[in-house]
Length: 390
Ligand code: KG4
Ligand code: ZN
Image (cartoon, rainbow, N blue to C red; front, side):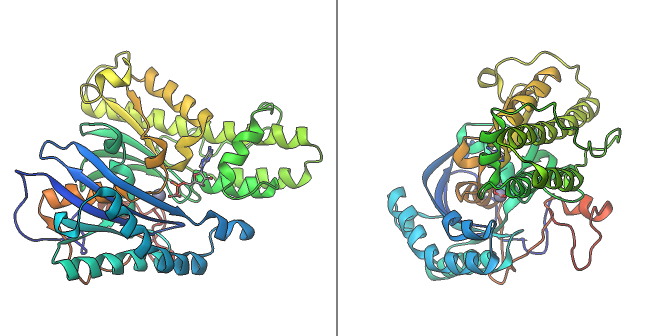
């Protein structure tokens, strides 16, 4: 159970009534606010979800510029929050708490949302819940439909790439993580080398449609290792070098297809290992999966979340691996795969349900592993100037 320094248990668990929570998200390049209602039975309703994307502010630079992001969050947060409250159709008196992302992320942006959340909490006499952004992604599948714990999660975005066993809020074990870059970062950097715009993932997917994935032989990272860790920096370097040498549209399309294939293959290879490890731990025989919509909550479940889950090749490859291992497959609706505040509001509401709130002096954390126990026991990046990224 995660009860890190930023959490302090105050009051008793609220079990008997609906909880309505305002969520705020400012950890990267989206300013977002949302109101979510959680029933005592665990069903979540999104009353509003407003996301202001800063893509246009950063496009000219080919990536997110932290200083520009923080300034834009300052300009947008009040208006985005007001819209979320208006669309939810409730006043501040209708809220039971305020949840704000407290990390990990670009710390200038995190401070904006967290400080704004503290101001709302103080002004309205509401409890504050400082939420780990990754915990938001981890619960995001529960926004689309009722989903029972536990499940196996692949979180794959621009900043994160990890496999987690999710047993409940604050009760997650990291099974593997990237030892260098996230998969989305590899998509973005290689897309940039191919002359595509930011964010590169969707553009690279479009280019790959006409390509032949077998033409380029790209490095296979960590092949043969028994753990569930990822590595994308070798692929990123090799593919970027090849991209600069591409002469024709045909070359570029073939390289894009090979990159997409290599990333999908690595994600599904490690997910396959995690599923087999899960099956060994939980001791149930593997069986053929039935359609996810009939069976969520009744059988083992594999969830993929984060922006890279939008990629159709990645999705199809993962879905096939899940079916082979007897797991139902679920990806949250796209709006809740990429960064949003509904997932933060839900994580906040689930914490509030348990009576876990935060002190008003909760700090913004640029790095904040979700499962601190395994991050400390097996630090992929040693603590220090860099620390564990995700
Ligand atoms: O979850 P997200 O919106 O933000 C982070 O928390 O990072 O993920 C953004 C990442 C970017 O790297 C973007 O290129 C990638 O998700 N992405 C895709 C696709 N759509 C978004 N990558 C590959 N194919 C896509 N269709
Ligand atoms: Zn994210």
